[in-house]
Each structure stands twice: as structure tokens, then as C-alpha cells.
View 1 (cartoon, rainbow, N blue to C red):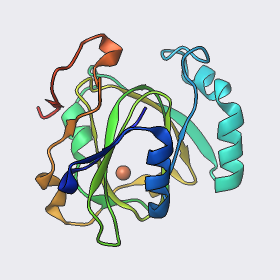
View 2: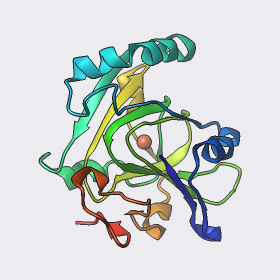
View 3: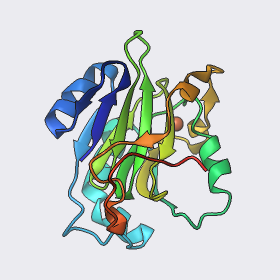
View 4: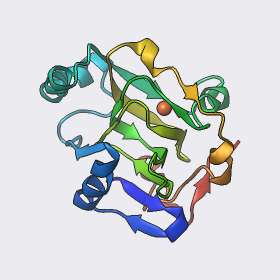
Length: 197
Ligand SMILES: [Fe+2]
């Protein structure tokens, strides 16, 4: 279940319907797809894409996406911080950022164009999100430094980060506050954990 926070007002939204409703005016689509009982979180890319073929195919047709893959980030990935540094500064993309989380956690910060408060949305397994092209945002992993996600693309080149040059991200700590961001490792987290190296 996702976990949405608006730091300026200390507001938290943690039920799927309310998160969906909050995100819609921002053009962001949120949904929940089952994972447990449907696919092994460590299944191969091909098995994962096959398991979610109905949803992926429908999205490709409705959204004009031409490709799908599975990204797999673990703490063993070399140059992890270098990779994260590409995405933890405010940027836009020329195409939608479409993700379905099979395993692990990640956090998007969204900077609304309408001048509204910055908000974060933490994602975990079962969470689907579509952040539309042009949305100002930045992204980090949570303490488990693990994410496995289906990605959809129109053109992979369009997913290159286009930096805004705004240092706004530095005013927000890369923290995941969700109820149990280390759940995949069976570790109970008593307080927010920074992923900062
Ligand atoms: Fe991005």
C-alpha cells in the first residue's frame, strides 16, 4: 500500500482510494494489482511480464506504449549512489514514468505545476503509478535499497531526466516514512531511515 505525505501540512494519506483521488487532479494514475499468490517476487523478467500481460497489454493499447521491461535494483548493484543521484534531483521526462512495483520500495516527490505543496508518495509491492510526462519530480529508494518494477515506455530515450535546475529536492530528506519500509527483509523499523550514504 502506498503512503502519501504532504510535508508542509504534515498530512498523511494511506488508503488506496484516497490516494487515487488525491493524485488524479495532478494527472497521476494510481492503482493496486495483486502480487502475493500471483507471482514470485524473484521470478524472471519474462515470468513477471507474462503474469501481468493482461494489465500491461491494456496499458500499451490505451497509453500508446511500445515496450515493457522489468528493472531490478538490489543493494548489490555497483555504483548505486551514482545511479540514484541521476534521479534524486528535480527533473521531468518527455514521456510518462509508468511503474508497477513487484518487490522493494521507492519514493517519488512530486512538485505540482499549480503551485501546490510538494508531496511524496512511497510505493511498495502491488503499487502501480503513472506519472505523466512533464511532471516535476524526483525519486529515491527507501532503506532496503531494493526495487523490482515493470516499466512501460513509448521510447526509452524519452525517459532521460531533464533537470529543472531547481535545488528544491535538497530541502526534502530522502526518507521513507511508511509503516514498514523494511518489511521485505523482516526488519521492524521503529523510525524513518535515511537512505543517504
Ligand atoms: Fe523520473
